[in-house]
Image 1 (cartoon, rainbow, N blue to C red):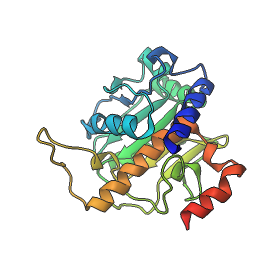
Image 2 (cartoon, helix red, strand yellow):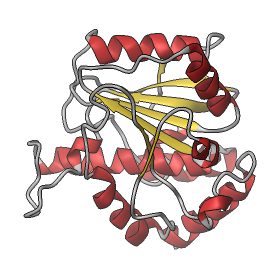
Image 3 (cartoon, one colour):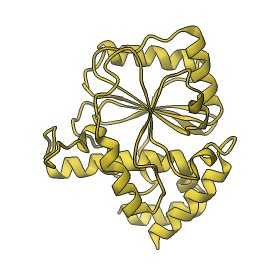
Image 4 (cartoon, helix red, strand yellow):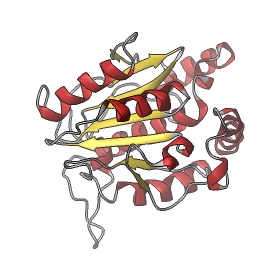
Length: 243
């Protein structure tokens, strides 16, 4: 029942996205990743694993291959979810590229940014914080509270996990009542990475890995369903499930 309900909500949400952003992909969710001059591809195979799990667990239709984009690619306008990864080298954008990304988030596109290194205050972290200030100058990064829809969009999460525990929180930047930029330093995508033999590439406990996977899936579901799970009708049910 839960899977069916989520599938219905996702399908409705797709129709409500500005410009019906998913229409050009046959209604399928697209995992788009930004390519830039630097180490942009820190988690090469994460989406291969995630797409399989997303389909079997949520019934969301998704393209099995990620879409690699540069800022000026026209396909960005039809990609409702854009991932930016890095660990040391960081992207340097022109004013034109900043304007494109700014228009993207203000038009309903969501950025998920992940610092794979988990190092606070270093190159990628510093650059991303500066970038976010330029993209959304009237807002700012804030800790996303645990009662937000991000932590309820599919799994009900009681804390903030990660493959590494750099922070006990993830951050977000709101436009209106939604987080249109979500920033993690806990290497959520690294929890999915496997080699060709099926061995996990990056160490952590099984429980830690599972919780990191759940949060990464929640972020995708949030991109599709928005604040649905904080609607007042759902609050008593969620509180009961969290006990």
